Length: 513
Image 1 (cartoon, helix red, strand yellow):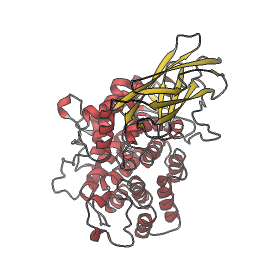
Image 2: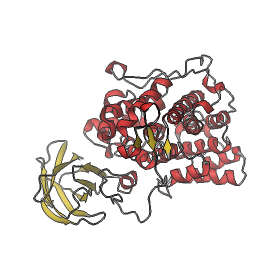
Image 3: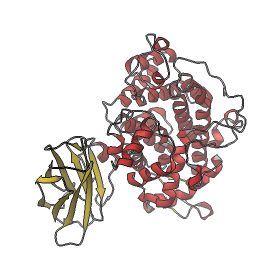
Image 4: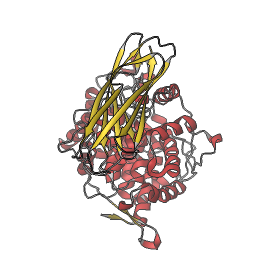
């Protein structure tokens, strides 16, 4: 399937117009709880003045990273942009930044000490990866994971993977049920995000009215977004169950599904339903606005909702003195995404001979995640050098990933990276053939540690790695804290292929309890 330049631009513009409109509609209802009948923008000064929204701001920073680094964008690069250009220090944003400043790298930066890891600040950033990878959901979800793990984990990340897959596929596939199934194929079937999505879809299929479905969602998959702002007496009611603080993504994704399904394809009705459920209203309404914007294209969106905003983008969360280039309009944002795509996508997914000497995108033949007989860390496509989203999410939460020239490495800690005097911590090291050399290898490893640490087992190792599919070599390293005087210490794992110049160093930071 080929996406021509003109159609692609219309859909990307539709995505950002829908995101902007939905976010503006939901903004006044953010952090409230209950059901509000919404029919129109509630801001008296909405004319050419949409409220600033972190949902868009954060994605502008990611676009700037993609413009600078192309397909080489990594979790580490995004983390550097996060620290440099993003100003908020609240909730998951702040905890992620605090971890990064301490030297805790992604994906651990999104997990360690982060009771907001399951919150909404991650799925709201999915659109940029869908727009840079249109019709390529497996690629979009990979970048969505690299983004999400900077400051989220578990349900927070699953939410972004779900929507990145849905939105990427929506450039080609328009059937709601098919899109939902595609999104679900990229996340665990038993996670809370999947539960919320399926609950709303099943209720809609059964003919349950929207208000009863909303109440059912709040009983079965409650959130806590508004709980930080409300008194206990204001949260009473059988539909007002409350989750632990920070567990917000599944509930708000369910609200997004309410708008999507019960809106039945009508843009205005959909964003009004989502916004009217309150909670993180700008996120839910903005996300469904973006999905429908991709499906319908900018030309298919009602001018009633676009004209008051006039494509203006206002920002609030970007450090403006840094020199980061911030688009002022949806048109400018769209043009920059379009210009970035040829640098971002593999050459095999581009046709550079399209109309007006521009390009077309060659989309995937299959949109569903390739989960059949999946092995952790497997390379289903020989020669693939990068980890896929499925590989990244199939691991323990205390895993770090490293990509080198001809091999990849995965280091998994048995627990959080904190160690007390006399304690030991075990880490599993797995070296994976990238399929580049197409021959069996010997993997050699040497472990070096900072003062205060001792390598109890695995200081030197050598293991054979065959050239079979998903070939890997694996070993265990055990490190003990002895006379650790510094608050942090490094474990450097020097990896090389026997009789070759290829090598890479995996760095793991440990912290004193």
